[in-house]
Amino acid sequence: MEYVSTRGESSSVSFADACLAGLAPDGGLYTPVTYPKIQPAQPGESYLSLATRILSAFAGDSIPTQIMSELVEKAYASFAHQSVTPLNQIGPDRWMLELHHGPTLAFKDVAMQIIAQIYDHLLTERGERLTVLCATSGDTGGAAAAAFAGLKSVDVFILHPHERISPIQRRFMTSTGAENIHNFALDSDFDECQAIVKSLFADHSFRDEVSLSGVNSINWTRIAAQSVYFAAAQGALGADRNLRFVVPTGNFGDALAAYVAARCGMLNGLELVSAVNSNTTMVDLMNTGALTRRSAVATHSPAMDIALPSNAERLLFEVMGKDGAKLKAFYDSFAQSGTAELDEQTKGALGCVGVKAVTIDDEATEAEMKRLLSETGTLQCPHTAVGSAAAREIPTECVDVILSTAHAAKFPETVSEITGKTPPLPDRSEEFLAREEVYERLPADLHKVREAIRAGVRR
Ligand SMILES: *Cc1c(COP(=O)(O)O)cnc(C)c1O
Picture 1: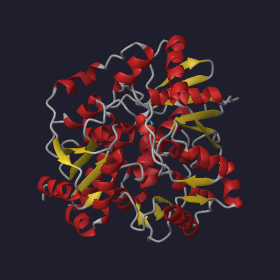
Picture 2: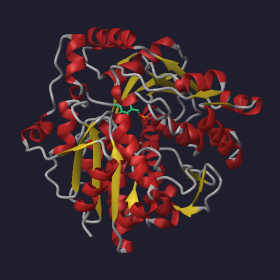
Picture 3: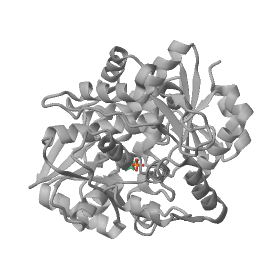
Protein backbone atom coordinates (compact mmCIF):
# COMPACT_ATOMS: atom_id res chain seq x y z
CA MET A 1 0.00 0.00 0.00
CA GLU A 2 1.22 3.41 -1.00
CA TYR A 3 0.20 6.74 0.50
CA VAL A 4 0.25 10.18 -1.11
CA SER A 5 -0.11 13.63 0.40
CA THR A 6 -3.36 15.52 -0.24
CA ARG A 7 -1.30 18.59 -1.21
CA GLY A 8 0.44 16.68 -3.99
CA GLU A 9 4.00 17.86 -3.33
CA SER A 10 5.52 15.02 -1.29
CA SER A 11 6.64 11.69 -2.74
CA SER A 12 4.53 8.64 -1.99
CA VAL A 13 5.45 6.56 1.07
CA SER A 14 4.70 3.19 2.68
CA PHE A 15 2.14 2.68 5.45
CA ALA A 16 4.97 2.54 8.00
CA ASP A 17 6.38 5.90 6.94
CA ALA A 18 2.94 7.54 6.73
CA CYS A 19 2.12 6.23 10.20
CA LEU A 20 5.32 7.37 11.89
CA ALA A 21 5.36 10.78 10.16
CA GLY A 22 1.78 11.85 10.92
CA LEU A 23 1.70 14.95 8.71
CA ALA A 24 3.26 14.86 5.19
CA PRO A 25 6.30 17.15 4.60
CA ASP A 26 4.29 19.42 2.26
CA GLY A 27 1.76 20.06 5.03
CA GLY A 28 -0.85 17.71 3.53
CA LEU A 29 -2.44 14.58 4.97
CA TYR A 30 -1.44 11.09 3.87
CA THR A 31 -4.15 9.14 2.12
CA PRO A 32 -4.06 5.80 0.20
CA VAL A 33 -3.29 6.03 -3.53
CA THR A 34 -6.13 3.56 -4.09
CA TYR A 35 -8.62 2.26 -1.55
CA PRO A 36 -8.22 -1.49 -1.06
CA LYS A 37 -11.27 -3.68 -1.58
CA ILE A 38 -11.95 -5.28 1.83
CA GLN A 39 -14.44 -8.05 2.50
CA PRO A 40 -17.24 -6.87 4.84
CA ALA A 41 -17.52 -8.27 8.39
CA GLN A 42 -18.54 -11.94 8.27
CA PRO A 43 -21.35 -13.38 10.43
CA GLY A 44 -19.91 -14.04 13.87
CA GLU A 45 -16.52 -12.53 13.05
CA SER A 46 -14.82 -11.12 16.14
CA TYR A 47 -13.75 -7.49 16.43
CA LEU A 48 -10.12 -8.60 16.69
CA SER A 49 -10.29 -10.64 13.50
CA LEU A 50 -12.02 -7.83 11.62
CA ALA A 51 -9.54 -5.23 12.90
CA THR A 52 -6.63 -7.45 11.88
CA ARG A 53 -8.00 -7.88 8.36
CA ILE A 54 -8.72 -4.18 7.85
CA LEU A 55 -5.48 -2.88 9.33
CA SER A 56 -3.47 -5.48 7.39
CA ALA A 57 -5.11 -4.34 4.16
CA PHE A 58 -4.02 -0.76 4.90
CA ALA A 59 -0.56 -1.74 6.16
CA GLY A 60 0.30 -3.85 3.10
CA ASP A 61 3.94 -5.00 3.23
CA SER A 62 4.75 -2.80 6.22
CA ILE A 63 3.43 -5.28 8.81
CA PRO A 64 2.83 -9.04 8.32
CA THR A 65 -0.72 -10.18 9.19
CA GLN A 66 0.44 -12.50 11.98
CA ILE A 67 2.19 -9.61 13.74
CA MET A 68 -0.78 -7.29 13.15
CA SER A 69 -2.98 -9.86 14.81
CA GLU A 70 -0.75 -9.86 17.92
CA LEU A 71 -0.68 -6.04 18.05
CA VAL A 72 -4.48 -5.89 17.75
CA GLU A 73 -4.89 -8.42 20.53
CA LYS A 74 -2.62 -6.45 22.86
CA ALA A 75 -4.33 -3.14 21.99
CA TYR A 76 -7.88 -4.24 22.74
CA ALA A 77 -7.11 -6.28 25.85
CA SER A 78 -7.52 -2.97 27.72
CA PHE A 79 -11.22 -2.70 26.75
CA ALA A 80 -13.93 -3.53 29.24
CA HIS A 81 -16.32 -5.06 26.70
CA GLN A 82 -15.72 -8.25 24.74
CA SER A 83 -17.16 -6.79 21.53
CA VAL A 84 -14.85 -3.75 22.00
CA THR A 85 -17.50 -1.41 20.47
CA PRO A 86 -20.89 -2.93 21.37
CA LEU A 87 -24.25 -1.84 19.94
CA ASN A 88 -27.01 -0.92 22.35
CA GLN A 89 -30.60 -0.64 21.11
CA ILE A 90 -32.41 2.50 22.31
CA GLY A 91 -35.55 2.35 20.16
CA PRO A 92 -37.11 0.73 17.10
CA ASP A 93 -34.37 0.80 14.44
CA ARG A 94 -32.28 3.09 16.68
CA TRP A 95 -28.95 1.97 18.09
CA MET A 96 -26.05 3.47 19.98
CA LEU A 97 -22.61 2.32 18.89
CA GLU A 98 -20.72 2.53 22.18
CA LEU A 99 -17.13 3.61 21.64
CA HIS A 100 -16.29 4.42 25.26
CA HIS A 101 -15.28 1.08 26.77
CA GLY A 102 -11.53 1.82 26.58
CA PRO A 103 -9.27 2.88 29.46
CA THR A 104 -10.04 6.63 29.26
CA LEU A 105 -13.77 6.33 28.51
CA ALA A 106 -13.76 8.09 25.11
CA PHE A 107 -13.62 6.82 21.53
CA LYS A 108 -10.06 8.14 21.08
CA ASP A 109 -8.90 4.98 22.88
CA VAL A 110 -10.02 2.75 20.00
CA ALA A 111 -7.44 4.18 17.60
CA MET A 112 -4.81 5.28 20.10
CA GLN A 113 -4.39 1.85 21.70
CA ILE A 114 -3.53 0.23 18.37
CA ILE A 115 -1.45 3.14 17.04
CA ALA A 116 0.79 2.87 20.12
CA GLN A 117 1.33 -0.85 19.49
CA ILE A 118 2.08 -0.20 15.81
CA TYR A 119 4.57 2.57 16.67
CA ASP A 120 6.34 0.35 19.18
CA HIS A 121 6.56 -2.53 16.72
CA LEU A 122 7.85 -0.42 13.79
CA LEU A 123 10.34 1.51 15.92
CA THR A 124 11.71 -1.57 17.68
CA GLU A 125 12.19 -3.23 14.30
CA ARG A 126 14.05 -0.18 12.97
CA GLY A 127 16.05 0.34 16.16
CA GLU A 128 14.71 3.89 16.36
CA ARG A 129 12.83 6.02 18.86
CA LEU A 130 10.39 8.92 18.57
CA THR A 131 9.02 11.80 20.58
CA VAL A 132 5.26 12.16 20.35
CA LEU A 133 4.06 15.70 20.98
CA CYS A 134 0.44 16.76 21.25
CA ALA A 135 -1.78 19.50 22.57
CA THR A 136 -5.08 18.45 24.09
CA SER A 137 -8.35 20.07 25.02
CA GLY A 138 -9.20 16.94 26.98
CA ASP A 139 -9.66 13.50 25.47
CA THR A 140 -6.74 13.00 23.06
CA GLY A 141 -4.10 13.56 25.75
CA GLY A 142 -5.56 10.97 28.08
CA ALA A 143 -5.94 8.39 25.33
CA ALA A 144 -2.33 8.95 24.21
CA ALA A 145 -1.01 8.74 27.79
CA ALA A 146 -2.87 5.49 28.46
CA ALA A 147 -1.84 3.93 25.14
CA PHE A 148 1.87 4.83 25.15
CA ALA A 149 2.52 4.44 28.90
CA GLY A 150 5.58 2.28 29.51
CA LEU A 151 6.61 1.82 25.86
CA LYS A 152 10.40 1.88 25.45
CA SER A 153 10.62 3.43 21.99
CA VAL A 154 8.45 6.50 22.53
CA ASP A 155 8.47 9.52 24.85
CA VAL A 156 5.19 11.42 24.97
CA PHE A 157 4.75 15.11 25.79
CA ILE A 158 1.23 16.41 26.29
CA LEU A 159 0.39 20.10 26.58
CA HIS A 160 -2.87 21.05 28.23
CA PRO A 161 -4.26 24.45 29.26
CA HIS A 162 -3.90 24.74 33.06
CA GLU A 163 -7.26 24.47 34.86
CA ARG A 164 -9.22 24.53 31.61
CA ILE A 165 -9.87 20.82 31.29
CA SER A 166 -12.00 18.75 33.63
CA PRO A 167 -10.28 17.15 36.65
CA ILE A 168 -11.17 13.66 35.37
CA GLN A 169 -9.71 14.40 31.95
CA ARG A 170 -6.53 15.65 33.62
CA ARG A 171 -6.21 12.66 35.90
CA PHE A 172 -6.33 10.24 32.99
CA MET A 173 -3.21 11.95 31.59
CA THR A 174 -1.29 12.69 34.75
CA SER A 175 -1.77 9.50 36.77
CA THR A 176 -0.28 6.85 34.50
CA GLY A 177 2.81 6.60 36.71
CA ALA A 178 4.84 5.95 33.54
CA GLU A 179 8.27 7.50 33.10
CA ASN A 180 7.81 8.12 29.38
CA ILE A 181 4.64 10.22 29.74
CA HIS A 182 5.22 13.93 30.39
CA ASN A 183 2.45 16.42 31.08
CA PHE A 184 2.85 20.16 30.89
CA ALA A 185 0.10 22.41 32.19
CA LEU A 186 0.48 25.71 30.37
CA ASP A 187 -0.82 29.02 31.68
CA SER A 188 -2.87 29.60 28.53
CA ASP A 189 -5.83 28.32 26.54
CA PHE A 190 -5.98 25.35 24.17
CA ASP A 191 -5.29 27.43 21.06
CA GLU A 192 -2.01 28.65 22.53
CA CYS A 193 -0.99 25.08 23.42
CA GLN A 194 -1.76 24.10 19.84
CA ALA A 195 0.21 27.07 18.47
CA ILE A 196 3.27 26.04 20.52
CA VAL A 197 3.02 22.47 19.19
CA LYS A 198 2.83 23.80 15.63
CA SER A 199 5.87 26.05 16.17
CA LEU A 200 7.87 23.11 17.54
CA PHE A 201 6.97 20.97 14.51
CA ALA A 202 7.98 23.87 12.24
CA ASP A 203 11.38 24.15 13.98
CA HIS A 204 13.18 21.64 11.74
CA SER A 205 16.39 21.37 13.71
CA PHE A 206 14.49 20.67 16.94
CA ARG A 207 12.12 18.32 15.13
CA ASP A 208 15.06 16.25 13.89
CA GLU A 209 17.00 16.50 17.14
CA VAL A 210 14.25 14.75 19.16
CA SER A 211 12.46 12.95 16.24
CA LEU A 212 9.05 14.57 16.68
CA SER A 213 5.91 12.74 15.58
CA GLY A 214 2.18 13.48 15.80
CA VAL A 215 -0.74 11.20 16.67
CA ASN A 216 -3.73 13.49 16.29
CA SER A 217 -6.36 12.59 13.73
CA ILE A 218 -4.26 13.80 10.82
CA ASN A 219 -2.47 10.45 11.29
CA TRP A 220 -3.87 7.96 8.76
CA THR A 221 -3.55 5.02 11.15
CA ARG A 222 -6.22 6.53 13.38
CA ILE A 223 -8.67 6.76 10.49
CA ALA A 224 -7.93 3.17 9.45
CA ALA A 225 -8.45 1.91 13.01
CA GLN A 226 -11.75 3.79 13.33
CA SER A 227 -13.14 2.37 10.08
CA VAL A 228 -13.28 -1.01 11.87
CA TYR A 229 -16.29 -0.24 14.09
CA PHE A 230 -18.41 0.95 11.18
CA ALA A 231 -17.75 -2.34 9.40
CA ALA A 232 -18.43 -4.23 12.65
CA ALA A 233 -21.79 -2.46 13.10
CA GLN A 234 -22.83 -3.32 9.54
CA GLY A 235 -21.90 -6.96 10.17
CA ALA A 236 -23.77 -7.11 13.48
CA LEU A 237 -26.98 -5.48 12.20
CA GLY A 238 -27.04 -7.45 8.95
CA ALA A 239 -25.19 -7.07 5.66
CA ASP A 240 -28.37 -6.32 3.70
CA ARG A 241 -29.70 -3.56 5.94
CA ASN A 242 -29.19 0.08 5.07
CA LEU A 243 -27.63 1.90 7.99
CA ARG A 244 -27.37 5.58 8.66
CA PHE A 245 -24.45 6.62 10.87
CA VAL A 246 -24.78 9.78 12.95
CA VAL A 247 -21.34 10.98 14.02
CA PRO A 248 -20.66 13.69 16.64
CA THR A 249 -18.00 15.69 14.82
CA GLY A 250 -15.03 17.91 15.67
CA ASN A 251 -12.07 17.29 13.37
CA PHE A 252 -14.18 15.06 11.09
CA GLY A 253 -11.83 12.12 11.70
CA ASP A 254 -14.51 9.72 12.88
CA ALA A 255 -16.91 10.72 10.11
CA LEU A 256 -14.16 10.27 7.52
CA ALA A 257 -13.54 6.74 8.84
CA ALA A 258 -17.14 5.86 7.88
CA TYR A 259 -16.52 7.21 4.39
CA VAL A 260 -13.37 5.05 4.20
CA ALA A 261 -15.26 1.93 5.34
CA ALA A 262 -17.80 2.56 2.57
CA ARG A 263 -15.12 3.20 -0.06
CA CYS A 264 -13.48 -0.13 0.77
CA GLY A 265 -16.78 -1.93 0.24
CA MET A 266 -17.49 -2.79 3.87
CA LEU A 267 -20.79 -0.87 4.19
CA ASN A 268 -24.08 -1.23 2.39
CA GLY A 269 -23.68 2.24 0.84
CA LEU A 270 -23.05 5.44 2.77
CA GLU A 271 -25.57 7.60 4.56
CA LEU A 272 -23.95 9.76 7.20
CA VAL A 273 -24.90 12.73 9.34
CA SER A 274 -22.01 14.76 10.68
CA ALA A 275 -23.41 16.34 13.85
CA VAL A 276 -21.63 19.47 15.04
CA ASN A 277 -22.25 21.83 17.96
CA SER A 278 -22.24 25.63 17.45
CA ASN A 279 -18.90 25.35 15.65
CA THR A 280 -20.52 25.16 12.24
CA THR A 281 -17.66 25.18 9.71
CA MET A 282 -18.60 21.71 8.46
CA VAL A 283 -22.27 22.64 7.94
CA ASP A 284 -21.31 25.70 5.90
CA LEU A 285 -18.84 23.71 3.83
CA MET A 286 -21.38 20.99 3.02
CA ASN A 287 -24.26 23.39 2.35
CA THR A 288 -22.55 26.29 0.56
CA GLY A 289 -19.15 24.97 -0.55
CA ALA A 290 -17.34 27.72 1.38
CA LEU A 291 -14.63 27.18 3.99
CA THR A 292 -14.38 30.17 6.31
CA ARG A 293 -11.97 30.88 9.17
CA ARG A 294 -13.59 31.42 12.54
CA SER A 295 -12.56 31.15 16.14
CA ALA A 296 -13.85 28.22 18.14
CA VAL A 297 -16.75 28.83 20.52
CA ALA A 298 -17.01 26.99 23.84
CA THR A 299 -19.96 24.60 24.18
CA HIS A 300 -21.17 21.71 26.37
CA SER A 301 -19.27 19.33 24.05
CA PRO A 302 -15.67 20.62 24.37
CA ALA A 303 -14.05 17.80 22.34
CA MET A 304 -15.97 19.15 19.34
CA ASP A 305 -15.13 22.84 19.83
CA ILE A 306 -13.09 22.93 16.64
CA ALA A 307 -13.20 25.74 14.12
CA LEU A 308 -11.29 24.06 11.29
CA PRO A 309 -12.08 20.32 10.90
CA SER A 310 -8.71 19.01 9.69
CA ASN A 311 -9.98 15.78 8.11
CA ALA A 312 -12.37 17.60 5.77
CA GLU A 313 -9.21 17.94 3.70
CA ARG A 314 -9.18 14.21 2.97
CA LEU A 315 -12.80 14.24 1.79
CA LEU A 316 -12.21 17.30 -0.40
CA PHE A 317 -9.16 15.57 -1.92
CA GLU A 318 -11.39 12.66 -2.99
CA VAL A 319 -14.17 14.82 -4.43
CA MET A 320 -11.56 16.82 -6.36
CA GLY A 321 -10.52 13.57 -8.03
CA LYS A 322 -7.27 13.35 -5.99
CA ASP A 323 -6.00 16.55 -7.61
CA GLY A 324 -3.38 17.68 -5.06
CA ALA A 325 -2.56 20.90 -6.92
CA LYS A 326 -6.21 21.94 -6.93
CA LEU A 327 -6.59 21.13 -3.24
CA LYS A 328 -3.41 23.03 -2.41
CA ALA A 329 -4.70 26.10 -4.27
CA PHE A 330 -7.95 25.88 -2.28
CA TYR A 331 -6.14 25.75 1.09
CA ASP A 332 -3.60 28.39 0.04
CA SER A 333 -6.47 30.74 -0.73
CA PHE A 334 -8.01 29.89 2.65
CA ALA A 335 -4.68 30.56 4.43
CA GLN A 336 -4.25 33.93 2.72
CA SER A 337 -7.74 35.35 2.93
CA GLY A 338 -9.48 33.29 5.60
CA THR A 339 -11.99 31.95 3.11
CA ALA A 340 -12.09 29.68 0.05
CA GLU A 341 -14.88 28.50 -2.21
CA LEU A 342 -15.25 25.17 -4.01
CA ASP A 343 -15.93 25.27 -7.76
CA GLU A 344 -19.30 24.05 -9.05
CA GLN A 345 -18.00 20.65 -10.15
CA THR A 346 -16.47 19.90 -6.72
CA LYS A 347 -19.59 21.15 -4.94
CA GLY A 348 -21.64 18.78 -7.07
CA ALA A 349 -19.36 15.85 -6.24
CA LEU A 350 -19.44 16.72 -2.52
CA GLY A 351 -23.24 16.71 -2.62
CA CYS A 352 -23.19 13.11 -3.88
CA VAL A 353 -20.99 11.37 -1.27
CA GLY A 354 -23.86 10.67 1.14
CA VAL A 355 -22.77 13.07 3.90
CA LYS A 356 -25.01 15.71 5.50
CA ALA A 357 -24.00 18.07 8.28
CA VAL A 358 -26.26 19.56 10.93
CA THR A 359 -25.71 21.89 13.88
CA ILE A 360 -27.13 21.36 17.38
CA ASP A 361 -26.71 24.19 19.90
CA ASP A 362 -26.29 23.89 23.67
CA GLU A 363 -29.99 24.35 24.35
CA ALA A 364 -30.93 21.49 22.03
CA THR A 365 -28.12 19.38 23.54
CA GLU A 366 -29.53 19.92 27.03
CA ALA A 367 -33.04 19.02 25.87
CA GLU A 368 -31.73 15.85 24.23
CA MET A 369 -29.81 14.74 27.35
CA LYS A 370 -32.99 15.11 29.42
CA ARG A 371 -35.04 13.34 26.81
CA LEU A 372 -32.62 10.41 26.57
CA LEU A 373 -32.75 10.06 30.33
CA SER A 374 -36.54 9.97 30.45
CA GLU A 375 -37.02 7.82 27.32
CA THR A 376 -34.19 5.33 27.65
CA GLY A 377 -33.19 5.70 31.29
CA THR A 378 -29.59 6.36 30.29
CA LEU A 379 -27.27 9.26 31.01
CA GLN A 380 -25.40 10.22 27.85
CA CYS A 381 -22.41 12.52 27.45
CA PRO A 382 -23.06 15.90 25.76
CA HIS A 383 -21.15 14.85 22.58
CA THR A 384 -23.36 11.81 22.14
CA ALA A 385 -26.43 13.96 22.76
CA VAL A 386 -25.42 16.25 19.88
CA GLY A 387 -25.48 13.16 17.64
CA SER A 388 -28.75 11.90 19.00
CA ALA A 389 -30.46 15.29 18.58
CA ALA A 390 -29.14 15.53 15.00
CA ALA A 391 -30.61 12.09 14.27
CA ARG A 392 -34.05 13.31 15.35
CA GLU A 393 -33.72 16.44 13.28
CA ILE A 394 -33.17 14.60 9.99
CA PRO A 395 -35.53 11.63 9.62
CA THR A 396 -34.34 8.51 7.79
CA GLU A 397 -35.67 5.29 6.27
CA CYS A 398 -32.50 3.50 7.36
CA VAL A 399 -31.60 1.80 10.62
CA ASP A 400 -30.08 4.60 12.69
CA VAL A 401 -26.70 4.10 14.36
CA ILE A 402 -25.62 6.96 16.63
CA LEU A 403 -22.02 6.98 17.77
CA SER A 404 -21.69 7.26 21.54
CA THR A 405 -18.27 8.89 21.68
CA ALA A 406 -17.68 9.23 25.43
CA HIS A 407 -18.94 7.87 28.74
CA ALA A 408 -21.16 10.32 30.62
CA ALA A 409 -18.93 9.95 33.70
CA LYS A 410 -16.15 11.72 31.86
CA PHE A 411 -18.19 14.94 31.99
CA PRO A 412 -19.81 14.75 35.45
CA GLU A 413 -20.11 18.52 35.97
CA THR A 414 -22.06 19.13 32.74
CA VAL A 415 -24.16 15.98 33.00
CA SER A 416 -25.26 16.60 36.58
CA GLU A 417 -25.95 20.28 35.98
CA ILE A 418 -28.26 19.43 33.07
CA THR A 419 -29.94 16.22 34.23
CA GLY A 420 -29.67 16.55 38.00
CA LYS A 421 -27.96 13.14 38.14
CA THR A 422 -24.31 12.31 38.59
CA PRO A 423 -23.11 9.50 36.32
CA PRO A 424 -21.17 6.91 38.32
CA LEU A 425 -17.60 6.28 37.24
CA PRO A 426 -16.95 2.67 36.12
CA ASP A 427 -15.06 0.66 38.75
CA ARG A 428 -12.08 0.20 36.49
CA SER A 429 -11.51 3.98 36.43
CA GLU A 430 -11.53 4.37 40.21
CA GLU A 431 -7.90 3.30 40.51
CA PHE A 432 -6.83 6.27 38.38
CA LEU A 433 -8.42 8.69 40.77
CA ALA A 434 -6.57 7.17 43.67
CA ARG A 435 -3.14 7.58 42.05
CA GLU A 436 -0.75 10.47 42.39
CA GLU A 437 -0.79 13.06 39.61
CA VAL A 438 2.45 14.18 38.00
CA TYR A 439 2.60 17.28 35.83
CA GLU A 440 4.77 20.32 35.40
CA ARG A 441 3.28 23.79 35.25
CA LEU A 442 4.93 26.03 32.66
CA PRO A 443 4.39 29.49 31.21
CA ALA A 444 3.06 29.50 27.64
CA ASP A 445 6.55 30.17 26.35
CA LEU A 446 7.92 28.35 23.32
CA HIS A 447 11.51 28.46 24.58
CA LYS A 448 10.63 27.06 28.03
CA VAL A 449 8.52 24.26 26.56
CA ARG A 450 11.31 23.31 24.13
CA GLU A 451 13.85 23.16 26.97
CA ALA A 452 11.50 21.06 29.11
CA ILE A 453 11.08 18.55 26.26
CA ARG A 454 14.87 18.41 25.73
CA ALA A 455 15.30 17.69 29.42
CA GLY A 456 12.71 14.89 29.42
CA VAL A 457 13.60 12.98 26.24
CA ARG A 458 15.46 9.70 26.76
CA ARG A 459 18.39 9.61 24.32
C1 LIG B 1 -12.71 13.75 19.62
C2 LIG B 1 -14.13 13.62 20.01
C3 LIG B 1 -15.18 13.85 19.10
C4 LIG B 1 -14.93 14.36 17.69
O1 LIG B 1 -14.30 13.43 16.85
P1 LIG B 1 -13.59 13.89 15.49
O2 LIG B 1 -12.96 12.68 14.94
O3 LIG B 1 -12.57 14.94 15.91
O4 LIG B 1 -14.64 14.48 14.61
C5 LIG B 1 -16.47 13.63 19.52
N1 LIG B 1 -16.74 13.22 20.78
C6 LIG B 1 -15.77 13.00 21.69
C7 LIG B 1 -16.14 12.58 23.06
C8 LIG B 1 -14.42 13.18 21.34
O5 LIG B 1 -13.45 12.97 22.25
